Structure formats: structure tokens, C-alpha cells
Image (cartoon, rainbow, N blue to C red; front, side):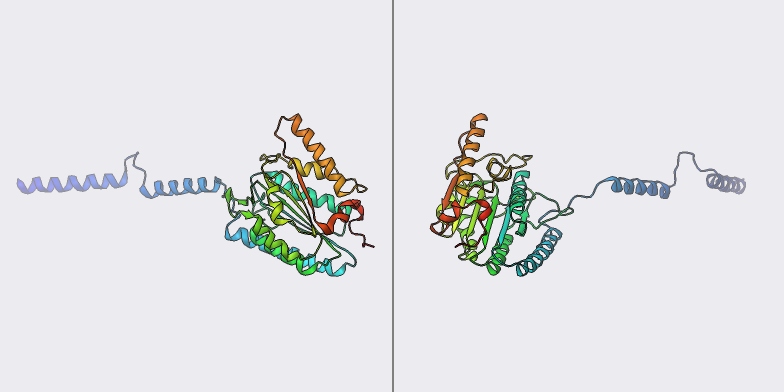
Length: 312
């Protein structure tokens, strides 16, 4: 009896096992299939997520900036050697990427000066750009050091150098910002050390920044003219994130300068235009400043079109 019962139990167990193999439960999805589906879904989500842009301060950002700077240096060296007579050298630095105005300023100044002097040798750098679409070098302390060295090495006393800087500023300093973070800043003493590389070359320095007049005492020299957007204790305007240009550069370069006017005359007009705009917009006066070194007094009275004419 016990033997027969045991046989029945064994037979029943075997039958149930065979049924389970032949007819799996309808809701029991195989584990491998479920994992495969999850993996596919994760891959699709990853593909739909846009890649984060590279930081300007990344290895790739600096490498691309350096490559562009090298190409520009070689091009400018060749152009300088091919030219005869007085030459115009332009270096423009938009030090902050927080507003389009700073890059806009250096580009506008380059455009206006090149229209007057098509042979102008130009170095432009700014931080309102991305690694993926980088067109010019980054505006960094190293960039300023290299550019002033390059110009000083090649220019001569018959040439003219124009150094244009646009940024946020405070007394005696200029901000440098990449990827939303400050690096630097640039002090008036640091800038003076680098401008010495230009030696005795006649130099026009244009600084569009708040409190930029505070830099004049350190930067002034007999072979320099300095235009500053604001008095030492004043702020300047037009540097909102989407502004195209600062008030100062818009007044100086917004319309093509009249080439028959001198720099002294243009600055008088600039101050009048800015004062009128500030009054209209109910802003505190910025009081732009101008310094003219002893050896540049005659130059400041020359028509702009005569800047590069050999002196008699």
C-alpha cells in the first residue's frame, strides 16, 4: 500500500513539472527579456540627452585657443614684414563673457579702424564664445602678455599701437571671466608691466569699464594717450548681458568717426553724447577721462585720417 502511494506521488510530481515546463505562467516574463528592454530604454534616453558643451577652461578649450592664437601670430608676422611705412597695430580684449557688449566693443573698434586703415594688423580676443564655435583666442592674462610681446617685438617708433580693453571694472582692476567664473583680475600695475613691452611706440589705450579712470595715474606715459569710460570714482554703462556695446564705445565708434576730426575733437563730442544719453536715461554721470602724454600732444590734434602719415 505504501509502495503504491509512493509511486502515485512520484508520478504526480513528474507530471506537474512537465506541465510547468510546457505551459509557463502567462504573467511571468523571462528575466533576460526584461533586462534587455530596460537596457534599450536607457540607451534611447541617453541618446536623447544633448551633450554638455565643453568649458572654455577645459583642456580642449585652451588647446583650441592656443592653436588659433598661433595661426593669427604667424599671419600677422608675415603681414608686418610685407608692409612698408608706418603701420597700425590693434589689440582688442573683451575680458568678460557675462555680456555680449565686451566682445561687441572690441569687434566694433576693429571694424571702424580697419575701414580707416585697411592694412591694420589685428589681434582680437574675447570670452563671449563657446569651444565648439571658437573663432578668436580667449582673452586671458597670458593672451595679453603674448600679444603685447608680439607687437613690441615687431613694431617701430613710426607705427601706432591701439590697445582696446572692455570689461567690468573697479578701482585699479579689470575683471576677467570665463565659464561664469572670475580669473585674474587684471590690475593697473599688471597692465603697465605688459604695456612696457611696446617701448616707445606711440600708443592709444582705450578702456571701457567702470572706474577705469583710476588706472590712468599708473598707465600714463609721454608716448601714450589714454581714453577711459569713467572717472576713478564713477561707473559706466551699457554692459547688460544682451547689450551690443557699452555706452562709451558706442559713442566713440558706433558711427564711423569723422576722419577729418582729431582725437581731441572726437573726445569732446563723445563726452557730450554720453552726458545727453545718461541724462535722458536718468543715470549718474560717468565722466569719461582723457590723458595725453607730452609726446602725443601733436598726435591728438591730427585728423584721424592723418594718424599714420610720416611726421615732418
